[in-house]
Image 1 (cartoon, one colour):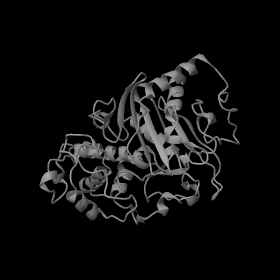
Image 2: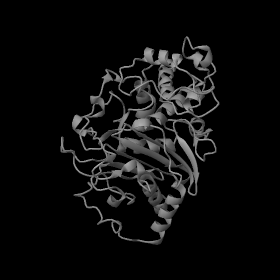
Image 3: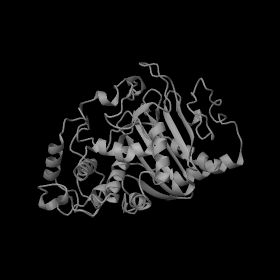
Image 4: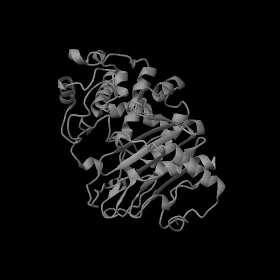
Length: 384
């Protein structure tokens, strides 16, 4: 999914901060009473009330986690129990995080550079054979910043496209622009990055992420197929008409995860708890050293000509009145997720839902104004 960062993010967050600092209103006064443990289960003791049930529409459900000053300050679910399993959304519920996967791919690449196994300035011909002449100028950095000129994708996420077929399709495709000339969001580019991770590491893409990113960060429930999930903990996705669409891995997948139209650019499964652990890991150097993080988060190319946001490696970077914002979203039409950091504030958050839009309810969690990210970020900063 192409990131959509609200142009009013800074103003909305600032307004929420001012409101939180100037008033101790009943948290539910705007749209109903404060949540009780019966309506929104407490997963861990909260040290900051940064999420309120009135932040989300009635009938929605999902999970949210927030960190500040090196600590987890909230991790909880909201909404009704799953009708199939009876499980309530919570801190340990497993969801498809969509294109939030891309920042893990970016982190894997800078980790490989940190280990001396590749350089982001490498032409892709150093990692693949048979690169055609029109694509020999593409570098690893071009893939990371969506400036390779490659098309967005080669078809549906769940088409049974193998790695060799994906690479062949990439070489046969027509470039949209000369490498390095423009930002064109490309899921195909991030799938090629997953293949480069495999070439440079000698491991499978998921295996490398598990060994070099997830395990050092303390993440036990993130991956494609390696975690031993209880199916009852995996959220069943629902379409806008509230019809069940199964769990993420119920769609056509290979034995080792999704086929290659999705691998590396999306489709990872995770929990709010694990994503909170990842946010905390990014504050220190357990996974990436300072130079690797500087490479990962450096704002590089404008997403739109004359636009205010820039793309780094799997992250959108924006200047706001609260300082620098690092952000990315992801979705597949059913599940939807957002990940955000305010590094100068020592704060970050992640939220995810398995039912992001309702035709009957008339709501779309992706299009809330102000967004759930803006609301939680505002309270995080105010509480600090």
